[in-house]
Length: 126
Image 1 (tube, rainbow, N blue to C red):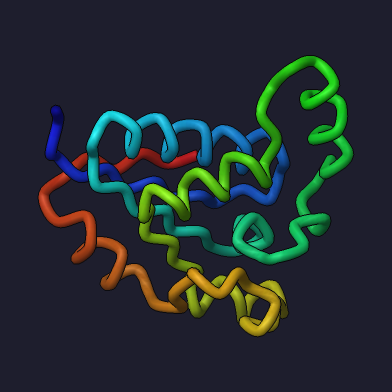
Image 2 (tube, rainbow, N blue to C red):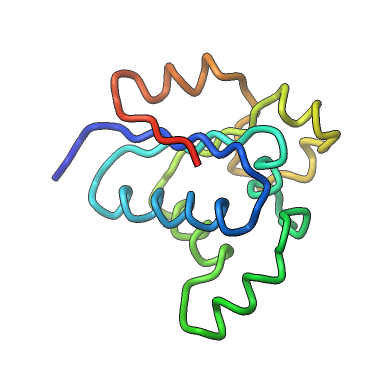
């Protein structure tokens, strides 16, 4: 199984991008990769207990009706597979998102913490 870490940098607050960040994260974790998701700016909404602040959040119900896993299912899978979730401290401040709204598994930290957690692994931006 691959052991190289994967860092996913979620910049967007759009549901389709947040959803796919968790598709990639859960897929890589299922393959045995160490995965770190770092959300910043409006992407931080994807790490909130209530992610309805994502643009086009209603899309989730539409894709579930078509048999596609929804954001809650993917996030739960990531948490179960111990994907490291980080919300950018500056991104939270920039978008006036209170850290108390985040999932309890989310660490609040900066970009240096994200890069250290990924180490020499691959980083993708969504």
